[in-house]
Amino acid sequence: MLELKGIHSFYGKAHILSDLSFAVQRGEVVALLGRNGAGKSTTMKSVMQLLRPRQGSVRFEGRELVGLPAYRVAKAGLGYVPEDRRVFTDLTVLENLEVGRQPRREGAPHWTVEQLFELFPNLAERRNNRGKQMSGGEQQMLSIARTLMGNPALLLLDEPSEGIAPVIVEQMARSIAALKSQGLTVLISEQNLHFARAVADRAIILESGQKKFDGSFETLEKQPEIRDAYLSV
Image 1: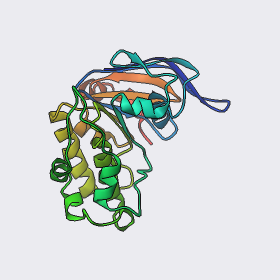
Image 2: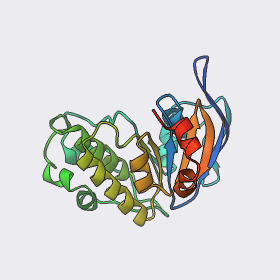
Image 3: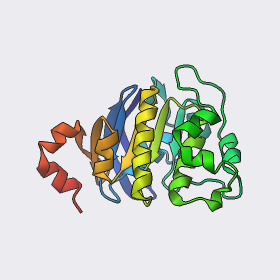
């Protein structure tokens, strides 16, 4: 469904991603793992064309994305939840969800407000609350729900468990499992190995913008030297 080949991305003169290649199959949940500064968020932005790679290819369902404006990438069926959430703090939960609404998309799960309230019960209880009245975890849920209102075929989640309470992290893990059961493909950027193992089928480890591992968590457990080298604090 998604294929990156030979991606080189820069911030100014800083070379962040170097010859990065990997693929995500339809229906998979794949976790991008690595320490701070490994290139996880830059990978997400490079896929969405919020940061345009200087070299390489990003293909979604066979269509080249490099060079497209970000809004056309979103219209092609990719949904992106950034690390900083970016909910509209003066809008209610219901109003935030309406902002994300897009038409039904062939080959992708279709979401209604009520379905999203079943997925995220906290939002149902606070449907008339403004974004600024919600906790960080609830804002994270709202950001994901708003993105799902666009009916994406592929969801990109950047650090969904960061800075939220453990009980909300558990709810988030259940929600991601439910998304997968609906046929949604998910690419997650994470530092939390326990959370990633709970929700993802496969791990891709980045270090200094390069891929160091791509395989199952079972394989990773059998190679503790890789885990210790690239994931230990």
